[in-house]
Structure formats: C-alpha cells, structure tokens
Image (cartoon, rainbow, N blue to C red; front, side):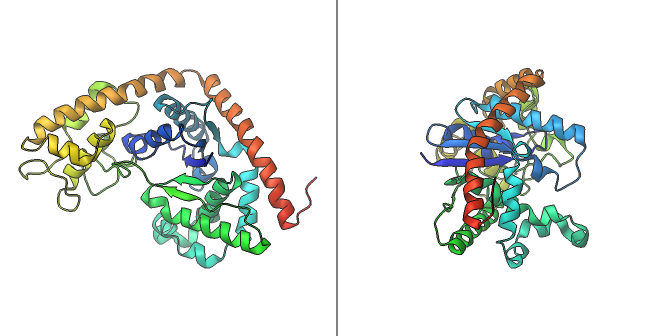
Length: 330
C-alpha cells in the first residue's frame, strides 16, 4: 500500500481552514493509504515559542485530529521531537542540498522579511527538515496546500540527488496530493486573505472549538458583495467564491452543483443554510475536542504509542541510509 506522510504545526486554535484544507482529506485517506500524521514541533521552534503554550498546543492539535476522525489505531499520530531520526536525517540531507536551492524558497523570504540577516538558521533550513520528515518514512504521497508545493518539489530534488550520489533508487520521489473543493480557505472578512489564527478579528475564522451558536453567528456575519445572485468567480467575487467552496467541501459536493442549487437566490438565504450545515458538521468536533483535552494523560499516551510505531519504520530506514552513506552504526 502507498504511504502518506503529512505534518501539522502545533500552533493552537485549529480553524476551518485547517480542517477543510487538510484534516478532512486526511480522514478520508485512511481507507486507501498507510497514513503517518506528525505534529511537527521541531518545525514550530523555528520561531520563538512559549514552552507551556507549545506543550498545550501539541496536545490540542492531537485532540483536533482525533476528534475530526483520524483513528490512532489505523493511522500513526506522533509528535516529531520524539523521533531523533528526523533531526539526524535532516543533517545528512543538509550535506546533499545546494545553497542555491534553499535561496529559491519563497516562504523563507516571506517569513524573514526585512529581518533576513537576523533570521535563525532553522527557519532557513526548514525545507530540508521537511524533506527529512517525508523521506525518513519513504512516503510515496504527501497531501499539500499550494503554499507547500515548492517545499515538496525540493524534497523530490533532494531525494533525486541522494539517489544519484549513491547509484541506487533508495528514496521514492513523493507525489503531491492536492484534494477537495476548498484546499485554500479564505478569511470570512476578506476573500483574498487566507484564513488565519493571526488575524485580529475573531469573526474572520471559525475555530474548531467554537460552539454551534458561534459558528452560525460568524457565518451570518461573513462578508459577501453587492452583486445580485450567487455565482462562483474567484477573481471578481472572492468572498462569494470562498463561501461556496466552504459549503461544497462541508457537503461533499462540487461547487458547480452548489451554485446551481442556489441560482436565483440571495446570500441571506444561502448563509442561513451554510450556517446550519457548518454547525451540524463542526460542533460535534468541537465537543469531542473539549472532552479529549480534559484528559492530557490520554493524549500523551496516544502520542507515545504513535511514536513507538513511527520509530519501528524510521529507525531501520535511518540505519540503512547510514550504511548507504558509509557511516558506521553500532
């Protein structure tokens, strides 16, 4: 069976964009792939973290994955820092990655901004650690958003240069999986800005911990436009397109079918139905998250058991990689 690897940062406040853009698809993949889902806490520390918040956020994200339908018996769920092989392989891959490849990474330029000279090395080398995460498990497929496609392409390039350097096809070249109608969910206040927990307005996003009343209120207040009728036009009607995409993904329908159903109706009526649909789909997740987060021992046990299963794959692979390179391993 093909193997999926994907990671999520423990930033806390999981929202609708995380769910529709990634987690909902991850749940569906469990039927067709061997799935490894990692809370990438080593990636998180490329920016300053409050230690207590990092611990709490790691548990919250784990609870969110399980509440949304990731089964820890069928899939492997663990936090990255428990498996030292991630950092070991990242160093080995650093030694096979030209600087010119990293200099092309647009996400580093965006995150470092004008303070590039003061950015930490970890932020610059982030894409190599991501490659190590994927290649350590010899993953065949990686679900990615548009903003991560460049990093996955780098992972494929690094795998290729490693294979050529040692004259064998050890690493598979992981294929991207971009799925669903709403792979990029936008702010409820600005259809041209990605939904984010960093936006000041709580009304810009639906958190996975929101109750049914809050979800419905935020949908009813979501920005639309003054154009008559409902149509999907991402360029000229971004807010309308965003809400249609959200409805389609929650309902497991195509955008075209949703647009046809509401043809001739106004946004007031559409948002009432979307609010009810969102509350029906999301409130049970919020309720289950609250239940799971009340038991940190339960969450920690899932992460520990997941790490044991992950190590069973990662450690033999790392030993083989060391042998290929010529490193003596006890």
